[in-house]
Length: 350
Image (cartoon, rainbow, N blue to C red):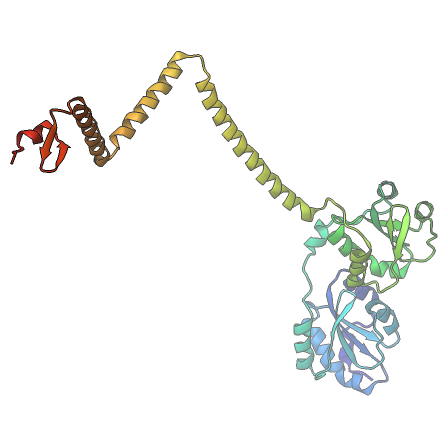
């Protein structure tokens, strides 16, 4: 017989466990068997753990008689007892292989399991995937676009377990891919369009236009379905990941256009002044040109001016010497040379 304290920890709460898994919460599951001596030794430590942390963590105690129902959800076979598994949603994160004491279980709990979230605001803000939106599906098919169709039935237990996974995937991919949720009551209208018969549930089908591309036959976990989506479907040309890029490109192009328009307006303004018949405008332009010429002359270096003066003097001297060659001719020894009048006055014959 177990200790009386085991009455505090509930047993086989499968519905609450499925709800926590579908909400994507972390859980610590203890699989036990009544006939297992090791499980009897762990009982008091588990009860103490539940009494201490049961309000802040999801702790579930599953017997060997109900383990198969949980095995289908987590995709794992539990055969040995006792066994402690930390899960996140429908996936197993880790298994406890250490001490089965209170301190050992408490350390494993705090390391691998996240506390319960108070008030899921994220789920309240999230819009669920619309159901049986057959008209929009037909429009997408007629345009030849890709779609992911989930056929489900409300009475199907596997569909209920997959509900949370589908909603998470829809929230992540609804802007990038076309995703539709079709119930068993509307499946026949879709079957006629894609040319196939859907008889079992749940079923995921990737279509392109009115043709079936592929059917998902693997695991129903978020990573497996996401890989199926990325591999088989083409994303929409317009989705949120491109809108930010498009906005930035539009802003850059608008800025370039504004700059070009401003330059063009400035150029046209100058041309309108030059071509204007108004004499005052032309007079102002001519005055501005004269002012620029005067300023340029003032800025000319003095060496240039001296050079021009010397060249002018030489030209005058050469002209004067050519006009009176005879008077400026002086013989000096064995040669005759032309000299200026100033040099001739101071010249002495030998």
